[in-house]
Length: 484
Ligand code: NAD
Image (cartoon, rainbow, N blue to C red; front, side, top):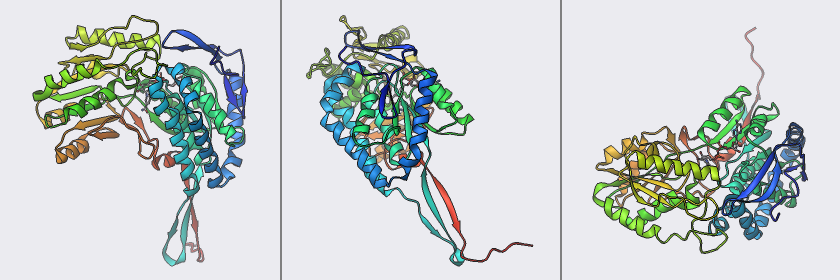
């Protein structure tokens, strides 16, 4: 098998196998073909990975930030040099078109390694002068062993968005990719070692939810960063709380995108396409509730349908293909189930709505109009290529409706009224907002959710605070006064 890795896990600088672990079949979503067979981690593998990370941590933290940063930046360079091969692997792991994976996966991972590699040498505490000559200084310290648990939509990116800031701060990591897309994180681990990361600094073990749970509850673990669904987030957060561990939760969403009559319709349609159909709709921050002001509704739907007819659906390895399969048969069936619910609850099907008759797990880009706030497709995260278009009349009305959700990951507005744009984003209950664009996530900017969509932020300088803590040192320059 062409994509079969040397072994299932990467621990202490090398590939490790334990065939006693439950089988994991890796399936190419475009054909349904098995492209690799792996094993879930046994308790012995979990033990080996955590010991390796624990043993490596003090020496890694003792390197200067410049040295740690140099290794991360070298890894970034290697990832960029191998971008095409890594993208081919990512396309086979996830089914996403090569047109996407060559620009949004290993490159995004490389950005994180480069950015946090660059920051590593500048991570410091501060000096705080006090009265009478006393002072405090703070020491920024690593947390220790961090666990990363990934979703299946951006496996390389998630492995790096968690690993890069963790390692920059002097932590070590055990990363568990999603069982659906286990291959590319192994390449990230290989590349880090090639770039000079000492053994045990970044380990990858495979497994289902039970392996993730055993990592989260282990007393050696200081922090857990999860990318996944809200139900999993609830469980992982609760288990982490038991050990008072630090957490970052990057969870699901049902984000609003508001299009006002004064917006540039072409740009708004582009935003809606990017925010609903990129990666076949399998993006957490997608703006799947598209509120369109009544006066432009039909014009918007007409232009959207015309543009969707140009989506090139097919073999994701064909560079002209812009829309690929869903990640798995299971995920496809979930999306098809929601499409049936949309029809049954009275939404108007404007585009798509069917499985595509070919091998693999292809669902047509699907648009429903006349969706109302209480329909299931407007309330639940679908995580597939299904857009709901809802009508609105006034700004006040749409603001309240946009926020009427338990989620708070992202939100966007298209308008040419400058003050309205800022008023709207000020009112959004969401962690990541967009004005006249959608779904960009540069490493320089914080990314994450409010409400049920998450805790903490990834990327940007803020991520440093989530992977380190401050030690406060009070220094007295005076005699100690005691009452007796
Ligand atoms: P999921 O919640 O089913 O699984 C996520 C990961 O958690 C997997 O690796 C899984 O094995 C592991 N897991 C499951 N149960 C666990 C447990 N009890 N303890 C520890 N680990 C456990 O999510 P998924 O289906 O892989 O991914 C889709 C979800 O991820 C969507 O809800 C999507 O919105 C979300 N997502 C969020 C972001 C973000 O940045 N906010 C990014 C991508 C995906």
